[in-house]
Image (cartoon, rainbow, N blue to C red; front, side, top):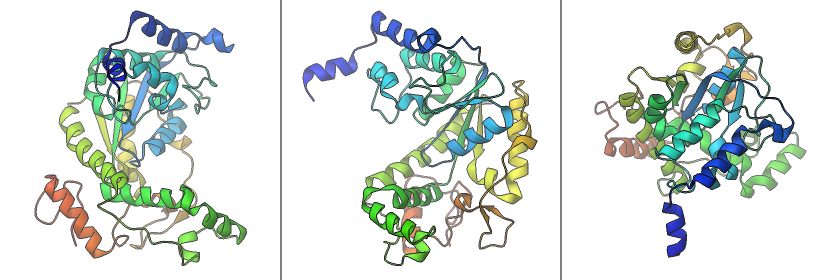
Length: 326
């Protein structure tokens, strides 16, 4: 990178650029919509593949709010925040907190690029779902006490399993195989097309190790920083039948304390459903959060070795997520 580019990355916002961002985020007349007041904003964050989208959609169903998906991932926002650190993780700064304030409260229209996937809601609650703000949650909680901040955590092994399944379904190398499966009417490609490559954990994979790093780093950080201002939820608790009611009760209580109504009767029914190999009640097939038996024993031992090296083992046989090494 050139010296000029480095200077531009390190330069703080100028007043003109601040005004540009404020203008873009707060001028609904540009898009032909009247101003809408948003109250009681909710910020949902977590590591990739940790269930943030699932939690945001659950909140939208129960509160009638409107979701803004990943606003910090868009060029319109990020080009005006490029004075900050690398794109995957935005670290605290006055400019970032100012932008977060606009995202939580500004009357963004439905078809704006920042609000590109927002869906209309019944209430004035805005739900901002963004992964890149995960490491700024304590600062955001202190700067915006009116916001409800929900951080969802997931066991890194389950996140990797979800990542591998997503990669199998979407990457360029398997598109031809997916077309074959669709032509043959197959939906479960892994089970019906035996020549699909086996999903496996690879410690040499930068993407997989970055995912482990996100999960491992954020869990203790958010636990220590919560102090009653950040509600930490476990994805497994929200999807497993034996813990779902209790987890939804905790979520409803947290929202009630902020005067945000949450009606569990409005939650969408789970579909499609299946039963896990432990004989539990039906839960969504894509959301069974059990990595046991998915990875071979050698790969599981290698994954636990990574957690042990990171200091994430509660004892010799259990990690701090409650999982046990077989």
